[in-house]
Image 1: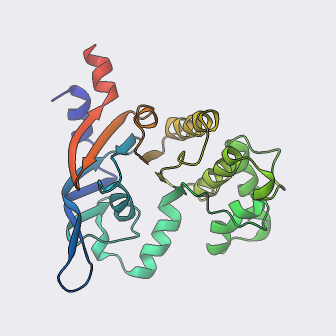
Image 2: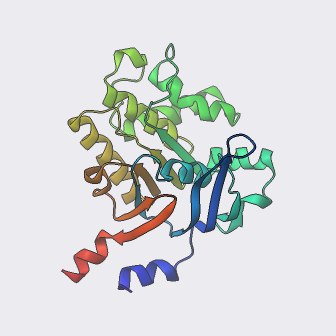
Length: 245
């Protein structure tokens, strides 16, 4: 075991998946096993890419990590707490506080400005308008969008829309950012910009988990976990390769 992998095991896990299975039932006699015994530990402050082709189980795993879905079998511990033991109302609050989500399709409200889109999680949390606006403005500035506060999504490029989506994900100051194919709809320049944003968020101490099917995108992470047929095929830390080189 590399020194980096040993150190990762020694630290507490902010995300821990233990023998997780997820089976979907399609009718009475048809079952689809999306995850088939996945185990994974992610320490605070890691930048991990979960990579796999379509049908590998990577998006299903992300939904479980984000508490948007529950395992059929196995355990998922978020910051040491079994997600099964958290009441649904508390789970929704925990998602809003602890996890920021970024999706391929941006999911911005079309007729709402960038800053108002970023404010939405704070509105759900009950913050007053002045504080919402100040925090949303700061989040947009953090991703280089301070000059696009009052633009509608239709007035932004794809890369700018995704940066606004990242700002919305971090406006609640979450410890974890989960990104599902966040560069899938972007050109190469915008992809590079967004991956640079994730690298900066990670450098600030956030745990970043990036779901992708693209090897060049995964290579920007410090650790790459490859899935296939619902199982972990490999778990490779780029830092370990650099140490060994």
